[in-house]
Image (tube, rainbow, N blue to C red; front, side, top):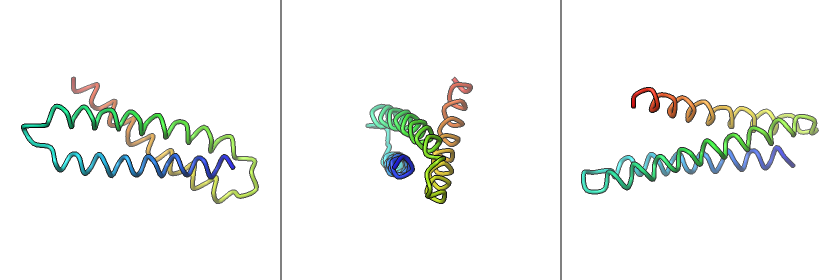
Length: 94
């Protein structure tokens, strides 16, 4: 059950990543401050969801469906690495 929940968290992370991409396309001078703040909040939410999903995937290692656990683990690690790298890069640049 934890593996399915972990996959759901990674699916939410994927949807929020698509939302960030769409918001980035529609950013212009009039609304750049609002959209950049929204993108930052979404990135933080994605990072939190990925960490929760990763913990759920680790807890579900003993489940019988190893393929689901493997997919959940890989997806959450992927989102964690992307957004951790992005946040660290932004902190170094400022």
